[in-house]
Image 1 (cartoon, one colour):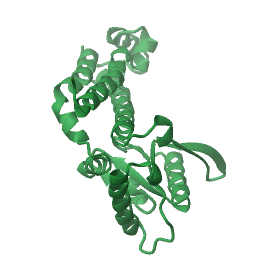
Image 2: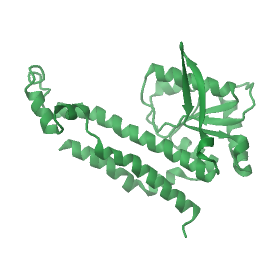
Image 3: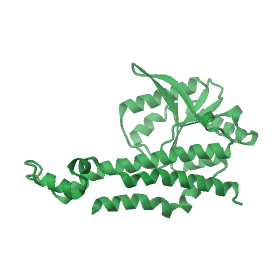
Image 4: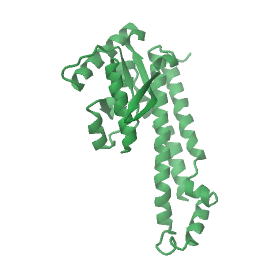
Length: 255
């Protein structure tokens, strides 16, 4: 009979492979528009009265064209994978019903009101006693690092789960900041775990004024403290399988 950890390992593996399997169906927009293959795209560019003059019909340019959309698609699927896996860890290890770790709020960003949802929400009084003690202690320490004179009593923690943050989209940034402010006035600690070390430093520095930002291994450690589960260890143990869909996609586009 599998142990609780083995059962969670399998669930996370299934979630990860489900999201990565979507890469098999990915066809870059320019390729789809040209007829469905890289060969069609090169032929299309070679007949173009501008592309053919400036070398934009070359294999090198085509590779660069396809690279941007491909990288975006890969990161999008990995982002979905991380969000789903972290939620599953909280559900399984903290005995949370899936609907209890969601949080929705109407926030104002600039002149626009919109409904935003947190990627994960943990309310202290819904947690098992031992986990509640760990999570509350961790959040109390982070609240004092976020603001020198906190005027709020925390009731929970709200998270925006990002595998990496490389965009500089101003509307998204403003909406994220508005969500963080809503959390704080509601007694909810805003935490943004970024599981890579390659995020946009300018945006992250800006976020640190309203979010508790954790990067790289600090994010994995936060998940371990909250749940008692070592997510990074799971990823390392399954590294070979997790790489295959990504490498397979990249190789298929290079042909």
